[in-house]
Image (cartoon, rainbow, N blue to C red; front, side, top):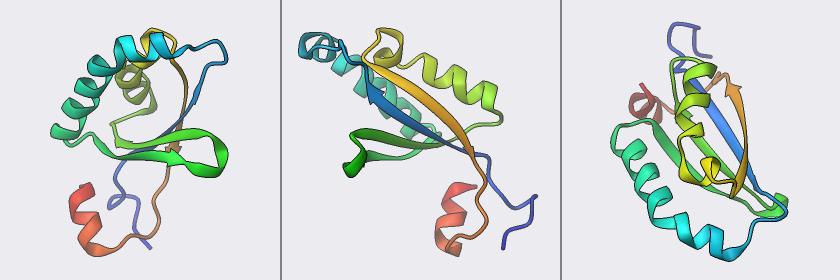
Length: 106
């Protein structure tokens, strides 16, 4: 079990498409959204992302110093700004982790 000092500040962003989102709106912001996520990955903020297959939603796992910073980071994502997805950010308290992965998270 990790001590509080060893735990990275992690957050999970669970996103769902908004009901009235259309493919044209999604497509018109896709390049900007992809570039934004790439910057977050390059900066070591966004750690992983992918669909939650049985739930019809997407999950983003990322680092931030606080829930306020996490919310600010993701409110700047074009897909959030332009109403393609609704975002729900939750603090994730990591208790156990493979040592090699923990090095990447810190």
